[in-house]
Image 1 (cartoon, rainbow, N blue to C red):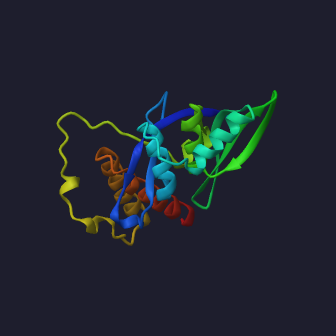
Image 2: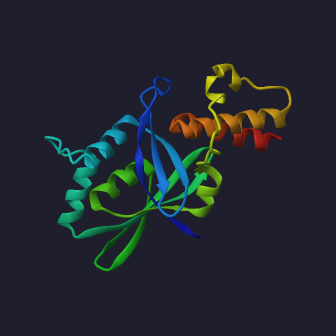
Length: 197
């Protein structure tokens, strides 16, 4: 299992997600990004730590850090290592008294813990290949005609190949516009279309 180091690019939200956020991870030594949809509470826990804002009372992840410190437990790394039915799975690799343990976790909780321990984040090569989004460079002089097209471009055509082309074009546009939540939705739609054909 090859691991790729990633870091947090940012969080974004949209009125279409009922309070969910897209957490965007980027490949440290590459050009791919990995959007993960997380809940509002976890997004807030990550954002507060990234902004170095200390809440008046400890959040759940702060409590975990305080307990871990009291018992000399160290978080070595976080790895997002599985993807099933569009759900990501992660492991918290921690060490206490020289003994290493892998603890199953939701990626949002694992990342909220990682930022408190300054632990590195990793994603397996398989996950990045399956769910990562590569940012494509525009040719010089290429205009944004696609961006001026109406939202109806997402309505499917009868030809699956033409539909895939439409979705890839829309995906590239979403990445260019840094609309990673829409990019994640399009990526999932492309995966569903490919698996059904």
